Length: 485
Image 1: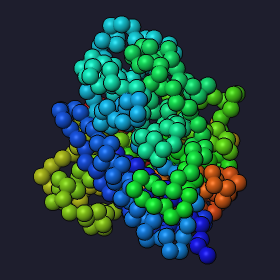
Image 2: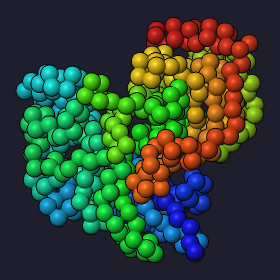
Image 3: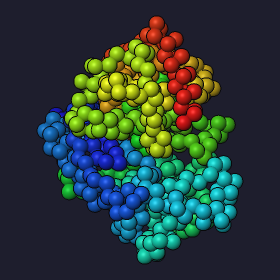
């Protein structure tokens, strides 16, 4: 008799990865496939929806082929990168490519929104200024610059809706992905038609239902061209940030646990419960499930894995020698160099540079800089933890590629002053999507039970209390130096 299993499909902005887990959280098999960025003009960053869908079918097919003799997949869920805009016609066929958040084409026409008072109107409704690269601004750009696309569009989709439509299911949005459109009223979980008017977004474009991440969207036997071998329950899943936090068990039922995602972006955070008495703000991550409503409390630095990859490409001949670089450095606070890795705002800088500096010293300074930048928001997270869960941060659970480096985790523990524990699931976002599928399918009654069974932790790194005072002093000097840039 075949054993039950769950499949999670994690969509990143550069690749798709399928993962099959058993009901105890053991990762059975994984498969990934990359898709290229399309950059038709300076500042434009797109993905082909056809290429993304092909990649998704390939990785799902690979995983099913490797496990179908012993396991039967019972449920499937997803994690998605956020803020990717896809316009489709009335038949759900794309009229545009997927336009990523990194695409800044709409920045140039922001003054037109300001001129018509749209920025102030948006702020009055949402409590913040519009994101110049957000979906509403990109739709406004489409109306002005690509009217043939704008006029042939019937729906504003994201990748979540596109995948569900491809499966022949109702193209719903879960609340975490709907929030990424910057058009959702986070208190009522409905589309804000007043905000739509500001950016000339037809109300009919955002008429789809907003649901829980573990909502049962339906059953399918085929994932596109892939035979799943039996009918599989489909849950829409959610935004990868919230899925990753869930995958580490950083939920209110596990008070004091903080998730640390060490991937392309480095993000620390936890999910807290919210209710009518404690509603999420417009800028909060909203993550609704059948077991309760959560809001995300996040601290993010954009200068994590992507910056480390740049360093390796630039200074190490493109070779994947992270292990060699970490082996060569000590993190003893004696390195005189500061490295501000703020590439996202073109403000990266290096201090105390001289001809005696080595590649290894620069790498050490870079890793310290990434950690220092993340530490800036740590006190706010600690305050939110105390406010929402009534306790201090007790443990940080690390996932992602960076979590495989012992010295990196030890540095994190020392700077933050909190034990850091490594998860066996490098792909925490996929693990979170798998937990959504497991609870949605009834394998576990709630996310506390799911995390108790599916989150597996290994190595633990305690703060070095001898080095910590020196690192706190170095952090203060780093912040003082960076403030002058």
